[in-house]
Length: 364
Picture 1 (cartoon, rainbow, N blue to C red):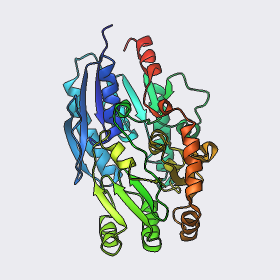
Picture 2 (tube, rainbow, N blue to C red):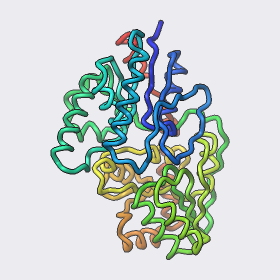
Picture 3 (cartoon, rainbow, N blue to C red):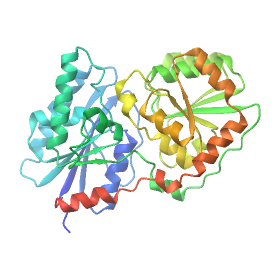
Picture 4 (cartoon, rainbow, N blue to C red):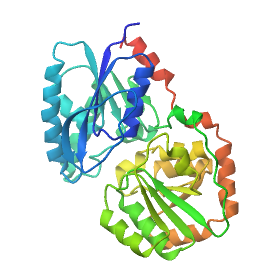
């Protein structure tokens, strides 16, 4: 079958999940062109197997509206390049798809992995962007959502003809990499954050733990996107905080998780986006059999508690953090690991035959 070429547009070049999706299409026999935006001050690993062409740059600290203006300008130029070519565009994130809707009527696939406008003020702007988002979802050839919670947020339970839910599971390449589960060391607890460090609740948890519980070693793996000065100050006085820097995903992930008893994923629960999202940390937790700590009152916490694979906490409450850390014992960790082990490892691995069956039906 002759597939149409897919033109991917990434909100940020360094997002591993997006790179993983591109590789899926390549493995399925699609020809692709890949473009993305650089974010000033951020480093990123070059993907293996394909290249990403930068088409713009926006600073992390830039306002949403200024960033959107840059994306609109870049996409207008990109669509001119493909004016007479039979391709299908694939947009990651709302800002990219929204910008594209302003400059083009071309067919597209939309992947939604967050709701960036959900806490915006004034309220009327939030409502307008939510209306635009639903319109983009309905007009897409296909909308991929990385969490079932987003369907609930948009109230689209009865309008799912062109929607597929694909959680952000781990890279299948991990099945080929050696991994040795960490043995629990009585009197020494190892907790880690893995990913882009940019949430206040993560900083709050780290600060409380490393300052009060000296038997806990806290590891930060990944790009520090916010709170750089605060973390550097903490490191000076707390040798139990270790900043490892960026890592290669997936090749370094086994090494990362071999150092951890628990993985932290307490994203800011006051954010509507965090309340409905299903982060890939849960699937890394399942794959590596490392219990997870998540924010109380979220879609993620409901799932973690139901499966018995981790802990929930209000990460902005000192007393709750203290109670949680004091309650963590070898016995409770082993219980969580046993529950993790009941889940087939393959359920945490990215495999999406339904996606390509849908595209085949649409002659894409």
